[in-house]
Length: 38
Image 1 (spheres, one colour):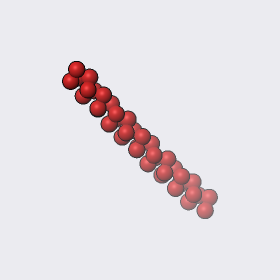
Image 2: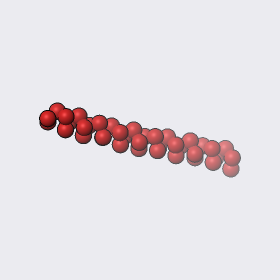
Image 3: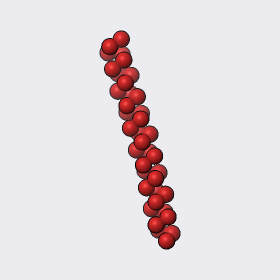
């Protein structure tokens, strides 16, 4: 039971980190596009 809770917590942490990472990558790509177009 404790293992299930622990794996669930670590899974959601990995998901959050992946989402934040994707957001940062998208922001960087948008900045590059804006600087090229501008």
